[in-house]
Amino acid sequence: MVVDDHPMWRDAVARDLAEAGYDVVATAADGAQALRVVGAARPDVVVLDLQLPDASGVDVTRGLRAARPAARVLVLSASGEQQDVLDAVKAGAVGYLLKSAALPEFLDAVRRTADGDPVFTPGLAALVLGEFRRLATAPAAGGGDAPRLTERETEILRMVATGMSYKQIASRLVLSHRTVQNHVQNSLGKLHLHNRVELVRYAIEHGLADASEPGGPQ
Image (cartoon, one colour):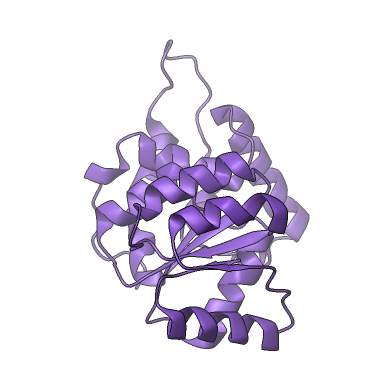
């Protein structure tokens, strides 16, 4: 489902998706319309603009997640402001892509969003890197004996945070796909989380907004 208040942009995105083989089950011009049709349309992915005429895209993201928990929200926005990114992910968005993205990048982001991979425009990925360094060394609340992430787990989680897929991580580190999956699952278990999306959201909700990572991926 495509949600955007600009008809030409909305139609162009829907057309590009259809030409790439995706089934566009619905389009919506504002938040209220999106929330009305999402239950019946049952989309797997919602491509959502943050700047809607009747509601905050962040609030619409929350509403979509409540109405259709199985739907994964990919924000496609003109705004690259840090707070917009943080608020969108906190509300439940799987990914955040700028409208300046090239078509192949957008289509790849939709595919990966459908798979549950956190996806970010590369210039925004640095927002999620600092927290993984902190998680590698900071004990969890409740005492110094809480498990910590290993160096390898932290390395892989940083790559997950930048939006890399398991296949890409495995190739970069010369590991098997299964080994990468095992490291991520071990990390999620230590942090009492269930999936990669929760992992990114957890990082943001625990102080990432104050983190700085000069020289991060661009």
